[in-house]
Length: 222
Image (tube, one colour):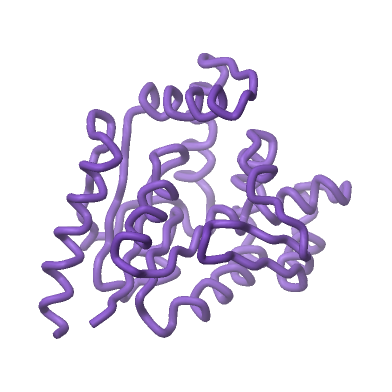
């Protein structure tokens, strides 16, 4: 029997990478909720909408068209923004727009509709606490600021994007502060979540740990 898996954790902890690999390995569908908030920030910035204008941002979040494909692509109003929304400007913007109740309400409703049939790997910052509080498996994925900055730095290098390691560390620390201190659905570990520190683990080791957890939990629902 298929179940839902919620993966929460701070920025750059590798949630999306792990979730994508898990979905492929388990035959599940991945829902990248962070990409959806980045889409809001991307469209707002491109449309020159002030990121402090909650009413306009909330209205935009309700009306915009976001499509996540099974091969990991993100389409915003028919535009492929898969790579564009990963830029730091939009990552930080996502943290800013995610504090608004109207934006969160619109996107959470979309996410819940997507996952209602089970068989989904959903990652974000409030999946186990707000979006899918009844998920059969909840993972809280953490990592040190140093290791997260190093991962982001290496990702940028591989993409040919110039990057400043120390600046990345500061941006991640700022993102952590914003995410854990926001009024609406702050980042926190669900009481029944299993915490995994990925600082010194390879991607393959993390995936295997979670696969074992999923398989064990799935047996309870057979």
